[in-house]
Image 1 (tube, rainbow, N blue to C red):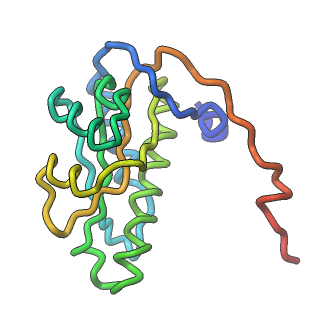
Image 2: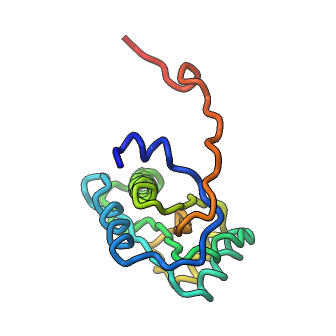
Image 3: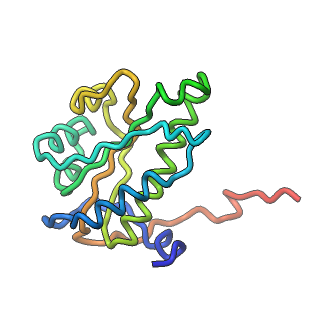
Length: 171
């Protein structure tokens, strides 16, 4: 699949088949994550691949009872590594590492689409609860929860703002 095709086909999928994801697809998702750009190439991020049913249920509860999360065969939690980014001070902790995790997640979402998987970027959750569920260190901050699986259905594309409203050319 061409990159632009994956960009246009990517959707927020919240309904998954009860089907295991083949290991080779999971490995491609991991590769997509690690090849994302990062501030100073510090790669100040960590990703947890959760297959455990009980932990997925707890994550769904921590995500304001978004139960579709627990239905996915794989749930990935993207975290900042605040210790690795400390070189950049406050701006690194409050911005760069969040951008690093976000860039990696976009790679993940596009790879999932290219591999005919569905995923959804979930940002609404209780950070403290997620940290406790995953036993994160004090230097780790959860940024996103991404359930991944084979989609039961592909949602229609949402409307987009006109380019003219979002992009300003400066010549």
